[in-house]
Length: 169
Image (cartoon, rainbow, N blue to C red; front, top):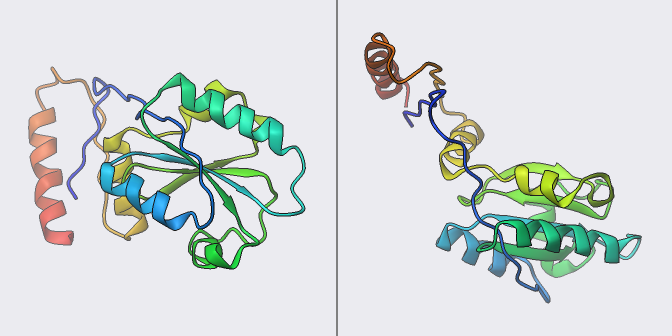
C-alpha cells in the first residue's frame, strides 16, 4: 500500500462507543470491522481482579469519542479460544484492554488500572494509521514520508515512494 504521512496530515481519533458482549467475542469484532469501527476489547478471565474499575475506564474512554465498540472477552471461555490464539492473549496479565483498529488489526494494549480514559482513547489510531499497521502486519513495504505540504520536493518524493511501492507490493 502506498501510504505517506505528512506533517500537515491531521492524526484524528477514530470514534469509539460501547456495546456489551455476552458469549463469544468474534461476532462483535467481525461486525465492528465490517462497519469500519475500532474496538476496545476488555480481556479477562476468572482470575481477573478489578473488573469494575476496568469497565469504568473502558466505558469512560469510549464516551470520549462515541461511535465504535467496546467488547468484553473471557479468555477462559472455549468460545473465545480462536481469538485468544489469534491475538496471543493466553499469557497476558488480565484485565487488559486490546485496541483493535477499524480494519481489524490489533494495535495497542493497556492495563486499565494503569491508564486514564483519555490515554486509552488516544491509543486508537486514525483510519489512515490503521492502514499503515495493517501493511506492517501483512509484511508489506511501508514508506513514511515526512514533510510540509508546501515543500517543492515533496511531490517528487511521493512519486518515488509510489514507484517503489508498486514494485515491492
